[in-house]
Image (cartoon, rainbow, N blue to C red):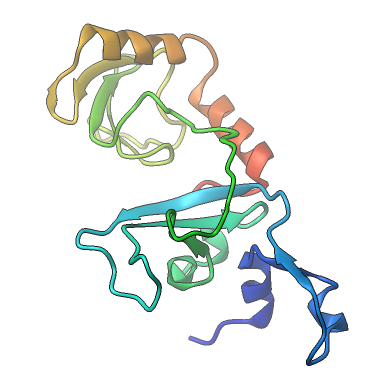
Length: 189
């Protein structure tokens, strides 16, 4: 499937000053990434490191989309094949990051929780909840949440307390709304 040029431009983080439309062969320009809000769509760990032309060989890849783009803009998942922007932390490019929001930061993939309505859920990511009762999960779990297991093993009192405290107020819908307001995007399906 061919990629539309506007999709490539929207995904790119680096900018030139002056803009590319003003540049000619031999011109001098500045290249960099202005302060940009992104959302991470994937984090991959490579062991052994990827064999690339770059040194050091990457041990991690972070794929992200710029504010205003979501995975729904790429229904064929092509955002994971170059339309999303990828970086390799540790490759020497001086990126600076500030975490603005991490939904459900106290939960880990595979955690099981009970919600305020007595439903049991499996958490596999902020937008990936599975209700054990088989009922639709469209609205997500009702807060507060009680951590039942951590990735299939009994949870500690501390972990359970952290989940309960982080979900004592608010709701899943508010978390989704806050994330959407920040990223100007829709959660991944």
